[in-house]
Structures are given as C-alpha cells and as structure tokens.
Length: 64
Length: 137
Image 1 (tube, each protein chain N blue to C red):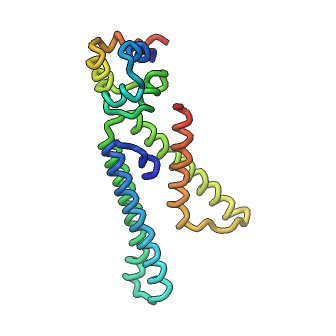
Image 2 (cartoon, rainbow over the protein chains, first blue to last red; image 1 turned 90 degrees about the vertical axis):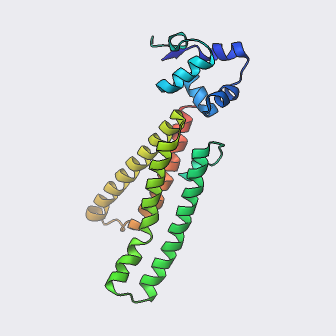
Image 3 (tube, each protein chain N blue to C red; image 1 turned 30 degrees about the vertical axis):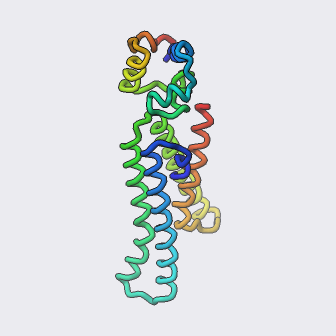
C-alpha cells in the first residue's frame, strides 16, 4: 500500500523516532510502514490520521 | 526469544524478557535437579515421572508467556515480526527432526537427543528473527 507518511512527517519536521514516540510504536514500525513493507492496523491508521489532522485516505492509497 | 526484545522501552517486551529469563533459569535448575535425581537417587516410578516432567514445565510456561506477550504487545509490527520468527523456528525444527528421523532409521545416523529440541528451537527462532528483521530493514 502506498502512503504519504514520509512527506507528512517531513512537513512536521519529525524524525522517524519522533513519530514512533507519538504513536507509541517502535522506530522500525514507522520505517516499515513508510517504506510500504508493512500495512498498519486500522487503529494505528486512525491514530496516524488524527496525529496529522487528516483522513486515512489522505495518507494511504491502495494503488499499486 | 526474550533476548530479541530486551533492547526496548516497550513495557510488554520488557515484562516478557524478564519473565522469559526467569523461566529459562528455572529450566536450567530443574534440568540439573532431574539429571541428578534420575541418575543418583534410584527413584521410584512416580518420582521418575515427576523428575522427567519437571524441566518440561518451564518450556510450557515459556509458550504461555509468548502467547501472553503477543496478546499484550500493542505494536502491530513487532508482533508480526515475532509471529513470523516463531513460525520460522517451528518450521525449521520440524524439518530438521523429520529429516533426522529418516537419517536415523535408514542411514544409520547417530540418534538426535530429544533434549536438544528445545534449545535448537530457541536458536532457530533467534536466527529466524534476525532474518525477518533484515527483511524489513
């Protein structure tokens, strides 16, 4: 699944570790999601959307 | 299994690591006790069973602890990596013991000590965890 996480994170000037801390997950988790190697669960996707004050669809797209 | 999660400030992983180390210390202590008891005490049949089962109990506890950790871990990715590593460990030990069984029965290979199954499984899970981690790097 494609996502705009890296862009959104850069806009906030957060490192992967900063985002991981806010999400209460490991930095590796953030990296795996950003690189599209791991799809987050729905609760984590909602958490991301709330954190960036946007919608899940604005962060993730199911295009290949 | 516990050592894979020790470098973390994740409370569930920290709890699991501490409990796992304690259980493995019990395994070591019970293994020594059972070995001494079975070899030197000339135990009665019920004590033989008790001494044989004793070191296996911490292994059961380790499996329960792992299930508990998987239920408690809030980080989906960490959970997914551990589950993949455990599956890798189970697969490797099943493949090894099955293949070795054929070698023992039909190719006169030396007997694989069944007491090696648990340590080998833990080693395989560790290797598998490293491979899974490398895959996501």
